[in-house]
Image 1 (cartoon, helix red, strand yellow):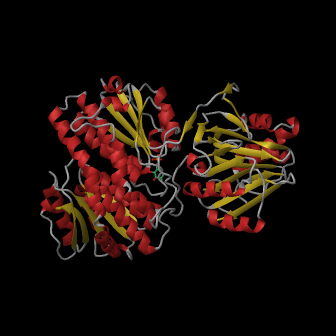
Image 2 (cartoon, helix red, strand yellow):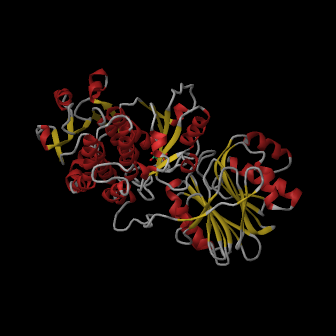
Length: 610
Ligand code: G6P
């Protein structure tokens, strides 16, 4: 959601913080700011509306210097994007704070602090926390105990970093419900909401746990847990070999990440497959005992990850013969549900920090599920730490807000998981070998699809001046159509809806005319003949059809029918391969329309608040 970065060093920190913000910009980008403790002992603050670049320009002019500082890039929750609402917030001239998350009881605290004489200059919940800590600081003169006392009064989910000019050698941080990591340096230490922000300065990290409060000094990091006991958090090294916060030769992160897919899908399979089998042990030493006896799977996720879950349902029911339910986390967590015996609770998340998914997992742990499995891309994330079993996708950091490689690696991991589960439920070894071989072909097939880029770019021109579009698919290709529509609406702002093709005549057909492009993903599977009649229904209404199909489909280029030929793929792995041309289509439409591809308006990469 928002991004936090901070440093306590012996060298000048503004440039370090600014680079950290650039790397976090994908999390939120409506304003950015920085507070530096200057050599003269005063706090200097700079805040700008807009992207981090606007802040960089302001800093060029003000040229602050100092060895302790905090910075923030914001995605507005309380209060519009504006300079007064941008972080850091201050209480008086001596205390500065940056905050991710939401303080639920900020209104009542605000009234109380007003009565104490504090004046408010913003509409944010964060400014309330600044004054609350200052109020406690006035009693103790000690920033650490002031933060401890203030946090005890807060309701909600947050990560905070606080500095005080009268307690100048440390930053005090705390987390409850929002991620925060400490970057360990030599003679300097850092904090950030995502380790990516700190890769230029360190590769050693300590992940704070729920309720932790930490004091960051140049030479020491001290941590107390939620019960105020001194705590040790292990130091781990950053694992991803490549620093993905760099666009390289590509114009956008999204395009770079689309092109990374053959490699990261391969990486997600590595060590988990032989030529003909899934290595169950590679999913964790406990995997065998956890999967045996599972009679039902409940999948929970949000956004693109939810679409991955929808595909997995087709696989789980077809290959493992086990009933599977899929639901978005924000709905699931607020309704009564019945937990069937021996149900596996499966969360899917790129970030591992999505607030609703995490909340659903925490509820599930109380609700009597057999075990909690997470498919996740970020090592050390909350979801990873709180699940019984984890299957890591190996997508590497994904920067583009519109998820691409995270989705196809999730599908890869989910298919591997399905095969392991199916083996406990009678999947014969021949069928397993057939699918493993098909999976091994996927990186090459995705590569072939990527080589269609030029043709897909030409097709994309037909969408440029359209306001609406319809995506159709049947079976496991329906969630692929949903994902294709989500991509198009996210980055090109064209209204895009996806329907199971069989539902066409129950409503959406009424919308079809020459102004409504209809996109169809149509591998040659058992549903092809039915799909063809759906396509005829569209043609007969003058609709413009864009069909992604393989050579065996018998579909040909005709007036108002554009056919893009996709390599022949196994019906089970088709959802992975067919996702890629839809990503490219959305990308090119967005580029033609001139939208902000990597940071589409109003969206954030990681939604760590409700
Ligand atoms: C946001 C992102 C999406 C993502 C969704 C779920 O909406 O913009 O790309 O699919 O959150 O995020 P997760 O990290 O849980 O997969």
